[in-house]
Length: 567
Image (tube, rainbow, N blue to C red; front, side):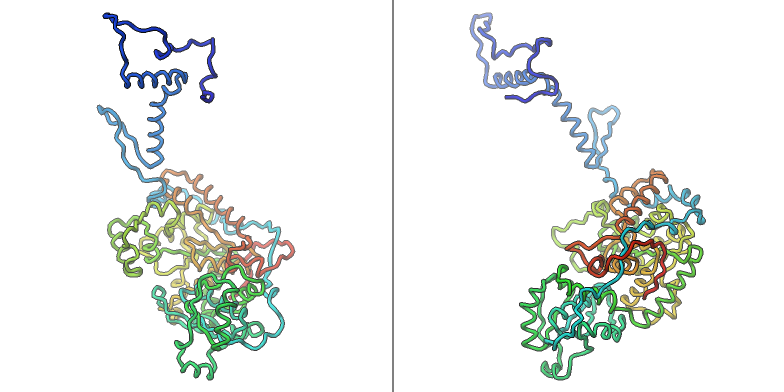
């Protein structure tokens, strides 16, 4: 049976029928000799095929054309140019890089710069109206709503954890340790900071966080001690390495801690968990979440030297932004050499850049990128939005959203890769650009040099108080900062998070019109505004989404100003 054809229904008397197939003719064909010709097997197959074509009323006659058209479409989707050569039969196929896979941002900037200049000098700065004032549901901090107010019983033992990674990875470990200590009714020893091979910061807990404040803030919830008591130390020959180290899997549930950790704690009086990064599940009982909230948003504050300098830096940014009511933009720029190397993306540095990136990858991740079977695809990484944005791209993005050259911009970053080359266009677009090295004097920064976590704490504080925070590459720094901003600013993160897949296509369009580019950027900004107030999902992190675990709904209000000063 055959389905209906798009070219007509079954047989119609109004149209002439094709000749009947020789298979269905009666009688025999006679040759000149009167002998009956016998068709070969091949001839019979050809006849059957031809008859089938005609019986289907000519649809298959289009098959060669459809096949050739399909191949051309396929080659186009795979990134090929089809070029017809003069005096040549057929076509020659050349491979073309897929849209968005090549770094062409400098060409786009060259095209758009004249239009940016026309929209300069504060004619309509987006900084004054960047966030919607129509807040239907505002939130306020209430971290203690789920924490028990009763006195905790005698401790079951001492918990020692080792926090590794950078500033905010350490912060995560500390807050989770407070939650686990509360869960097990254990006394928490001030966390040990592991010397990380990437961060290379030898800072102790008290160098970064206010130790006295931390202990005192938690005194009604978790017992925190600076060191183990003498009798416990003697039990382990005054050597912390003799204390059993329990290997806890990542994202372990409270049940696991009750079944595996608590018995050892009761038996030995002290246990270690090292490393401790991400060792507690996101979904835990409300009282445990309450301890996480309290530790992160209330008990942890930076040490006095960090707070003092950070407060001065915030004051200077506000003063420099007096023309915009003290409001400024902060950008977390991840374009350090290690980040560029790890991303396996290519920019416009040619063979020199490739050589430098190979050296950087081998220095920091020995052999990881040279393993057998590992294929590096820079173009695919860029299309997929995995490439760090360059300072040039960040500047174009901000100008497209309506931030003009009078906008004060603070850049939080480490040592930018080839800073002289890549930072120049960003400074050209935003002359009022500051970093910690320009905002603080060399003498003020001297005690922090060589300590990446302490320097990151300065960046963190200045970004926390900006009217707009721009994240460009993900990681713990922006995730924690977005949570803190939501906690302090009525539940709204006031954060712009770009769509880097869409940006890859826009920055690979040298012929794009300024109106089209600007409209796309403003659409992204509106989307970030819409996503500013977002509640934590079951699998989400309260360090990024503090509501509803750490916050409560309050009466609707409008909040368009940055007036809170918390350090």
